[in-house]
Structure formats: structure tokens, C-alpha cells
Length: 557
Image (tube, rainbow, N blue to C red; front, top):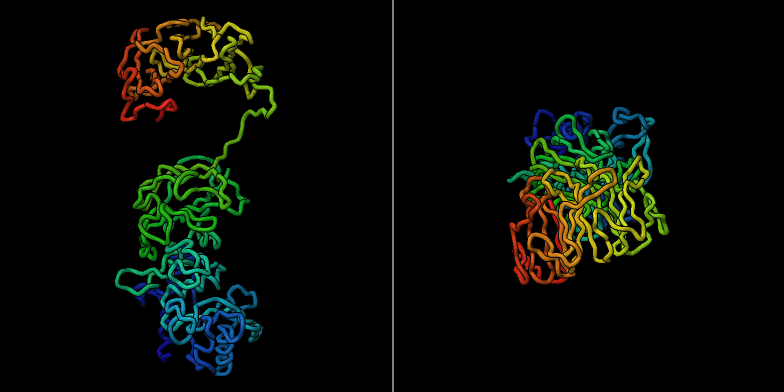
């Protein structure tokens, strides 16, 4: 170790005004803390130790439980300091807890975290074999760093000693390229993981460490944490900019959960200039959730190089809890990486507003005791709201229409078992099915279609008065279907469809699985005409052949 090590470390730790072009440790912490932290201290030495560094490494990087180890080194170093001069430790107990805030031992040679050698010393936080007291102030915790250390290692180890942050990578396997590490954990996105080795092109690793993660900053109250309790759009600035905000996401905004996600916008600026990418990061649980996973590259943030604009139960990565359960956290419509980003967040779980267990008594007087029972939503009042329920029992003529009144359901139309159906349609076949339909292109699903696959029967029904219904189109049992589609196969199905992208489900799509048959019908003054037709056999639609009896179709936005 050369004699100029003291001025070098004085400059590395405490200089201001960018005496070091990439910044000092105090400049780093002033920046990442938003001005909350400023470091002062003293550098003394160097001192010759009783043994060389390999003695303290002891074949275990100095981390072995048996002496000698780095605890022995730190004790020998402090003994050398006391023997050479009088020291006053009171100025270095900033929080007045009776302990020096940071005691740092700079050792000769390179660090084992860089060389990988078990005969070199690993940079680490530990405690002395015994507390040492000088003028009522104690020394116990310490750090070791190598003589060639850059700001990254120093800031990382101070993160342990001053702020209690753990290593945010898993230990004991080689995945990260550092012996003894299981996974990259939060990767290159945090000082307490691979981010301590951040650097710009042409510079040495560790000269531009990135910011601590949102979680690290939140533990020190360096950021404003907004706990989301509902579903809405949010704007998110780069976390380095006022108001330095991150968002906490968990089921229903639960603040007591030990699991949660913190989301932050990280852009490549300042000490974050060394980041492998930019955009939205979601960290929490056991490791960082990124748009692709891995230690760190430009595809990791959202939307990232992979253009992943959502984070939810089914995404990769997903928002499940550590145990694999749905956390109900979802983020969608994530904007491109920028100083100001936007997205839609959701944390609400699904809870029943009405519940009947098994066995139950149905709803609104309708007992739901038959396996044939069916239900659909319906715009009974032509209000534009699907706020009534149709419940029916094919084969019995049973049909009820229920309205909700403050959580209590009551019947506006009821035909019991047996009943006579609705609007002239008898509902006497177990094959009968129903859908809601916008017959007159009003934008309201206020007409009902009942149909009987295999028999050609189809009725379109509208409410004609209080509790009264009449057909506007009718083909009875043995009829000819609708618009040229005969409904003669028991496999036939139909649904309402917004053909013109008008916001109105005013076209009918009819199809016959297993045959390639599909028709799309338009109502023209009560007469239905095909705007698309593939007969039996046909070739399906849009490349989908509809050749399997198992095929099904539905409308989708």
C-alpha cells in the first residue's frame, strides 16, 4: 500500500465540486438521497498490520467464522490507530447513540469480489470481536474495502453499515459471475446488487454506481411512497426528480402486507446514467420484476426493448405473490420510457356483491335448482345499461326478469315451472338459448333473441309495456331460421356483434362448428341480409376453418 492512499480516499469519500469527474461518495449520497445525506469524516494512516492480507483472508476471503478473518484485521487496524495517536470519536457519532457511525478499514491489494481468489479479502460489513470504547464512544461495526476501490464498492458497503440495507442478490451459487451467488436478484438496477459496478463506456467498473432501488430509498424516507388503493391512471416522473415519488401496489392497497410491489420510473441520467435501460421498474417480493428478467439489459424495464406494456397475473414476469397466488396487482397501458411516464394501475380484488353458497336459494325468488338453468344480462328499460337479469329454464317455459334494488333482487317478469315462455316463444325445448341484441341500432341491447338450434326456430322480442313482451321477428318450431341461415343443425350457435365498429352490437354472427359455416347478418327494416356468408361446408372466417365440432366464437374488443 502506497503512502498516497490517504489523500486518494479523502478525495474519493469526501470531495465536492466534482474533484473526481465521476463523483465522490458524499456527492453520490447527496444526490441519491435528494439532499438528505452528507458525509464528513477523517482518513488516517496507512498502518502496517502484524500479518499480510492472505493471513486475514485465511483461505475463506476473510469471511470464515474462525479467526483470523476480517474481524481480526479490523481489530488490529484499530489497535494500530490508538497506538499512534490520540483520537476523539465523538464527532463521528452523529445520531448520538454511543457508537461511531462508520469505521472503514482500507486493506492492501484487490478485493476478492473482483479477483475471485479465496486468498484475497472480500469487501464486507461485520463487527469487531469485541466493542472498543474511546472517550465514551464505542466502535463495533466496520467495513473492509480494497486500496483500489472505486465509489461503487464504497457506497455499497456504506449502504450496509449506515442504512442497514442487505445485499439484494442471493448468495451461494455462481450465476452472477461472482463466486457464491445464487441469482442476480435485483440485478444491475440497484446499488445493493450489480448496480454497484455501474460504469460508463471506457471507465472502470464501479465508477458510476446506479441509484439504490425504490425499496432502499423508501426505508430511509428519501422518496414519497404513494399507496394505491383503487384502479386509475397515474403519471410517474423519473424518481430522481421532485417529488421523488414511487407507488406501492398490493391487494386492495393493503398496508400491512409484508409483500408488495414498489414501482418507479428510472431514466438514464446522473448516477443512473450507467443503467442498462430506462423505463418502469416494479420491485418487491423476493426479486425485481422486469419486462424480461435477468441481471440487467435494455429489455428489462417496462415497456423496454420487448415493448411489454403490461404487468399482471398472466404476464411474464407476472404479479403473483411469492406463494404463487393472485396479488390482483395489474399495470397496463405503460407509456414509452421518458422523464414523465403514464400507466393504468389496478389493485382491487374481486369480492361478491351478492352471494349464495351451496346449497343456496338462488336469487330474487328464482331457485336455480335445475341443471338446465341459464342467465344473461339485459337492458330492460332501454337505458343503455345491462342492469336486469334474464333467468330461464329451457324445456319448461320458465322465464324470469330480475331487477336490482340496493342489493335485493325482485321480479319484473315471472313465468314459473311450467310456464309459457316470453313474447310468444314457448321455451319448451331443452335446446333453447337466449342472447341480448341491438335490433334497431340504437346502441342498446334491449331486445332478446331466443332460438332453437336444429329446429329453425328464432324469435326477436322487445318489451311492449310494463311486464309485456312482443316479437318483432318470429320463426316457430320447424321454421326457416333467419336471413338465409336455417338453424337446422343442433350445433348452430349465434351471438351479437359490432360489425361496423360503431359501438353497437347490431349484427348477428351465426356459425356451425365442424362445417366451416359462418354467416354475419344485418337488419334492414326487419329483414335480415348476409354481409358475410360461408355455407355448409364453408371455409370459416379470417383463416380459421371452423372444422372442429368443438369450435366456439364470441365478440371481443
